[in-house]
Image 1 (tube, rainbow, N blue to C red):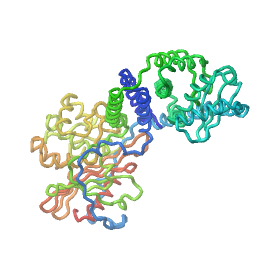
Image 2: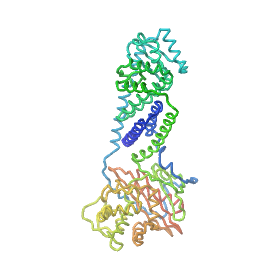
Image 3: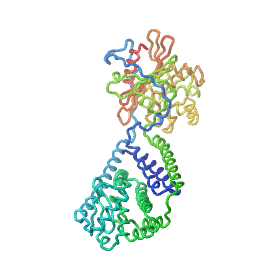
Length: 580
């Protein structure tokens, strides 16, 4: 479990615990009150479910078609007319804090905590087993007969061992495969058979209600979530509710005249719980817990039909409410933001051979065919930094705001040497786009007010629209992110000018991103390469190809390859499909 999952589980557990504590304020039957805690177990299980089991996209109406895979050519073949000059990478390394190291640290701390707490619980279990080894079976015929009678009353058929020990001060039951009840030697000697009956009924009721085995499940989650103090508080309350549910079940099996005697028996067994308390179900507890149980016994009334129905309704309502909240917590805490594809016609294609060992995706669509052809649909929805592909829209915004014009788009070089010699000169929109000159587009950013920039991104509906990363930096492995699917959708709306920008500006940007021409086909596009701490982490090639009477739009993204690699993959696919 890494940091994002820890944050998600923390928020989800606090929400679930708060809801359970709130619902517990209503009058529920003791059994259903205890059952509420299983909703917490369900919520705590969510982070361990396979990725993708809980997703908003599963609830949307997707109309998906699957195409028949085709055999692509070998990657070594070259595309006729393909000129690789425009695919030169101009990626600049961005220095970022390596969160993966932080995740590793948190993972190690979490694992160490699990080992430590597992040791304590295991040590408690060993100590308990040592007590059992020194314990003796009950020899009293009367007590053994009473024990069998209680088992018959509760319809318990399984074998349960009854031992007596001088090393404990309160009755308890524990075990997973072999269930054992331990009774203090002092109680065996001084308690009446009637009082012992109450004690035995209570411990057997734990087994009948499966509390003994379920207790290990709660212990497992307490170990896994040792770092969350709210879990410890919640499980402490759960144990009280479990004892109340057990008391409630026993009282339902007794006649009203026995309620007071049962309460006195519970009170007489009071003893501060030993250090192996959590691995057992004990008749005792803290003073506060005993007080709560005695109060419950004193005010006990048999559950009416109304109380049972109300308890079930509240339990179901609580279950539904928590279930609805889970996707919101998983989405809010996810370190990967996915674009929700809904009401779209999708054709999935197996193009894995083109990507070789690269983890990537390609999305294709056209003006006439509104279906989206996708390889790796999950990754096509993943928002990542646009890097230099954003310069298409940076240029458009700059033109709209008159920071540059179609006739005058030049900026002077400040004389400071750059990483690439092509950047060390005055630049126009065309040369800056061709050589992906960062400083040119940083000047454009500075000439546009941040509020106006935000309005344009909203108008374009550009990815997550987050420009908090800073002027000239937000699109470079920073705050602004967009998915390949959104890139294609946005390219089509740009091409058709759905946002009603100045048509001259649209044509100017199109002219700036024209790459090459072959016959009647013209290729437009922009590469982008993300480099973090010297390592390539993101490669883009987006654009469109005008062919015959149609225009096809594409966006290719790969995890570790450069923009030139993404362009190579794209050109091979376009060639194979006869699009270029």
